[in-house]
Every structure is written in structure tokens, then in C-alpha cells.
Image (cartoon, rainbow, N blue to C red; front, side, top):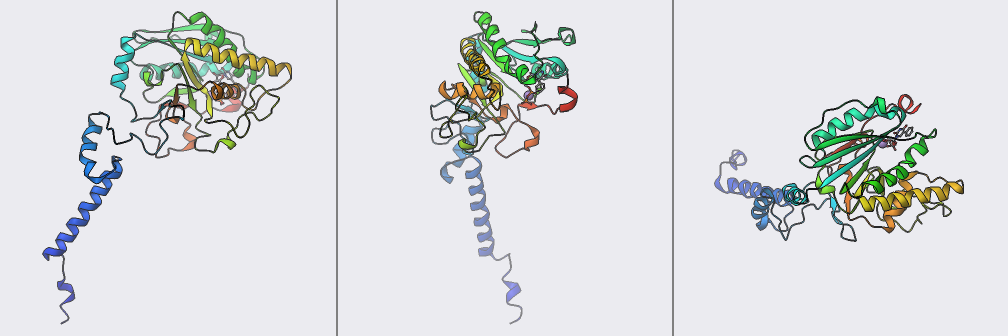
Length: 333
Ligand code: 5GW
Ligand code: MN
């Protein structure tokens, strides 16, 4: 009598069977989740197609983040594109990419690491011209670059107020874009206090693109830090606005970058005459422009991240990282 219970032991065939079935169901469920398949039966086809990077017409590449804007501009996330296909397309066009950075006053310290990281990760295999705008030409070190890549230093004025240093980039990029219409295809405009940490390639290139500001990512649009003073040229009402873009990273065709920076600079001058300056300076004007001139591609926070924000699960790659800076040390003169 007493020995009955322990004898319902694992070795009995139907018990083994039950465990087997449970394990099978669990792994099927896990696979379905992992490969975003609609039905468990699809799992094996899903997996093969994913491996070969062939599109699957009944499976979204990403289900954890938005990959398409309401005006059908792709939001660029890891797993949504095939770089080999895009590289072939852009090589066929023999595309030339200009990248602009400003290193005014002490910000020249960022240039070397910025360029070195770009040599590893930015537009590898394509024609790249770096344009470094600086007031301290002699502080820019000599660097050897890889094939088809060049660096031009442009001497520009500095401004006493840092807000003007930041905002005047728009004017200088505008004047520069006007000159480069014929010699570059795309312009990429970025902050210099940054480093590339993973591939940033032709998947970003489009007529006009902006990058989601990682600090605002996931917030409702009413909470975006747009300029809320109706007097300002950067004003966006609380019931408007779709995405909040970062002043750190934007670009597009030379012509579109000209139009964007021209708008931002003119708006800035109008505000300045009224003694107005929006909360986030050039970023506020950029957001105003991109709200009414929709970008044709949007870069996900993979393309602009701050490690202070941690590393959330949706972030599969951190391609372009803000460099931690000692604010007092770097910003005073
Ligand atoms: C100096 C003091 C405060 C804020 C900005 C500056 C500053 C910015 C400067 O002295 N020199 C300079 O070249 N800049 C350019 O403006 C850099 O390209 C920099 O990446 C860009 C934006 O300024 P950041 O990076 O300090 O702004 P956050 O919002 O990225 O911190
Ligand atoms: Mn910055």
C-alpha cells in the first residue's frame, strides 16, 4: 500500500510521453515567438527565410518597434534591410557621400576619435569626404585615411555664446551645400562629440532623413520638447508633431540639405530680430522643418544613442554613440 505513490515514477511510458509533448510544445512556442511567425506550422520556413535574408510575405521583420512612418517612410532598424542589396544599388550609382562636423574651440579634441571610428564603420566601400569646420585649423591632426576617402578642413568663425556656435551650423552648412551641389550626392550632418560603434552605411541614404532623438523615444507627442512659444518660427502646437528628431544627425541629397538648413537659418534670423531663441536651438527649427517637409527615411535610435540610457531590448545595435564629456572642462573656452 505505502509503496504505491513512489511507483508512479518517471520511467512509466505515459509519463515520459507527457514530458516529451510538453517540451515539444514549449519549444514550438518559443520558436514561433523568436521568428515572429503567425502560426507554429510556419516556424521552419520562417527560420530558413530569415537565414537567407529573403523576404517573407507573411512575416513582419520587426514586431517590437515601428518600422514604417504614416507617410510610408521606412524607419531604419537592424533586421529590416539587406545591406548587400543596398550596397550593390549605391555602388551602381557610384555614390559620393560628404559628412560635415563642426569642431569649434575645444571641441577639436573630438575630431581624431570621430574620424578614426568613421574609418571603421561609416560608409565602408563607398566614396567619402569628411568636412571639418573649425576655427582652430592647426589643432586638427593629420590622419591617414583609407582608399576613396578624403578630409577637408574649412576655416569658419567662432561665436562667443555656445547657443550661437550650435545654431550657426545651419548657416554654414547651407553656404557649403550651395557650393557642393555638383560634387557630392548626399550630405550627412552630425555632431562631433560622437563615435561610430557599428556599421552606418548606405541604408541611411535618402532624399531627406532625420534621426529619432533617443531621449524622446517612446514618449507621447505632447511631451516632446518642441518650441511651444507661438511667437517663435519654431513653434509647434501641442496637438501636432509625429516624431521628435535630433539635431545631432540629419542629412539627405545636397539640394534637400540646402533647403532644410536655409529654412532653419532664416527662421533663426527672424526669431533673433524679435529676441527669441527656441528651447533646443537648432534642433527646434529642425523639428519644425521636418514636421512640414516629411523625411523620406527616419533613422532609429540605433543611429544615435547615449549609454546613460541603458541598453533596452529593442536596441540590437548601437551604431553611433555620444561620447561622455566633462562639461566644465570642454565647454569653457
Ligand atoms: C560648447 C558649449 C556648449 C555647447 C556646445 C558647445 C560647442 C559645440 C563648442 O564649443 N564647439 C563646437 O564645435 N560645438 C559643436 O556643436 C560640436 O560639433 C558639437 O557636437 C555640436 C553640438 O554641441 P554639443 O554636442 O555640445 O550639444 P549636445 O546637445 O549634443 O550635448
Ligand atoms: Mn553632441
